[in-house]
Image 1 (spheres, one colour):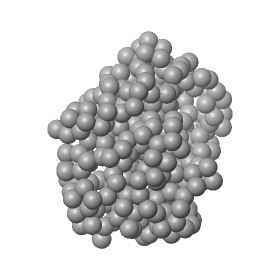
Image 2 (cartoon, one colour):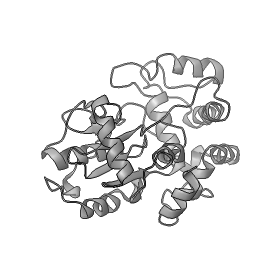
Image 3 (cartoon, helix red, strand yellow):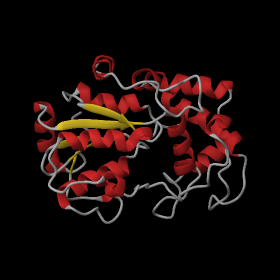
Length: 272
């Protein structure tokens, strides 16, 4: 299994387990900058050099050795499950991707046909009932996660706890898990613990949002998208995320966590 979704700085000081839709573009760029004194020109997910990534064959051995020896500062970042699944819908389902096409080719036509979802026309710019379509997408997301039908779950809406756990199960240990909603505070904690080649001033770092502008703007407050049934579905899919990452299931309008993450609890519950 190894360490899928793991990135490491060239100096092997920082190890990051990527969780999709949780500020991963910005985090990757900060790691890149700490080594090179400049941001990667383009989407950091496309960088094939300048950072160790599990997806690069030449990085696998180094990442495995560093993680299992627990020599680097290992961390990840999580996000409120309500806003994360909403963001996935607007970016991946309604939006046109960087390559000018729909995400995963035939996925959106399948959703329109089988679940009656609307996405705002061919370019995502037409008006449509966002709340109704999102709730239908939620049914689809649940079907993929519970029954792997009509397809396997996608990394952008599969549970964060699943991403986070692979790192632990294979011998890694997190030194810090912080919240997208308190990004600068969480990232500063990490930067304070290591010596970087190039100092990073967080208040000067742009937000690298790979999904910005891909899809239609969200027209309503978060809580308007979730009725009683939707909240039930979200809990069915993300129960563990709410529990171990301390988010407020009862109130979709409260994006902030209720307390800090308990690292011992995370390792105990997600380490099997």
